[in-house]
Image (spheres, rainbow, N blue to C red):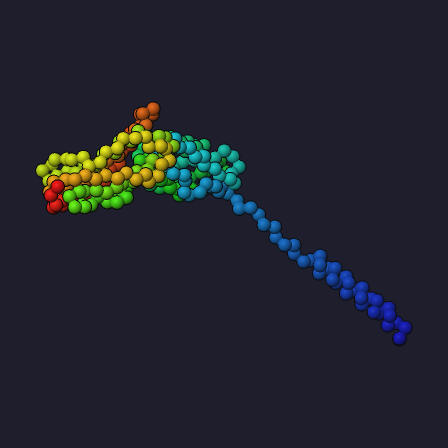
Length: 233
C-alpha cells in the first residue's frame, strides 16, 4: 500500500498539469482594436480667415472611403465669390465681409456619407477704430483713430476727418495721405482743429486703394451725437 503512493502522486500531478494546459488553451484572446469604419472628414470646423478680393483656396479631405469622394453643400451658404468643386476644392475671392456658416457632405459609392459644419470669417481688409474718441478740449475738437491693413498688399490711403456743423457746413479737422503697408495693425492717426462755437458731428473716413489690382476699400467712423464747442477762439 505504501509503495503505491509515489505512483499515485505522479498520476495526480500529471492530471493537474493537463488541466492547467487545457485552461490556458481555452482562455479567450484579447480583442483587437479596429480602426473606425466609414468616411471621416479631416478638416477643422474653423477654416482660415480671408478678406475681400483675397485669393482663397482650401482642399477638403476625408479618409475611410473606398472610392472617389464627392463633396457638396447641404446647408448654409458660402461667401459670395467662393465656390466648391465636387472633388473638395474650395476656391475663389470673397466679395464682402461677414461670418459664413455652412455644412458640407462627402460621399463615395459604397460608404455611408459624412457631413460636418464649417465657418469662414471674411475680415475687413481696411479697418478704422477709435483710439481716442473725438472730444471737445476748450475751443478744439480733437482725438485719434487707428487704421489697419490686414492684407499683404500696400494701400494708397486717404484719411479725412470732417466736423459737420448744425447748418451742414463741414470743416476739415484732419487729413493724411500716405502708403499704408500690408500687414499694418493699429496705426494711430491723430486729428484736431480749433472751431467756432456750435455743435459738430465728426466724420472720420479712410479710403484705401490698391491701384495695380483696381481694388478700393473703405471704412468710416462717426460720433453718435453732436459735440458742443462753447469757448470762443
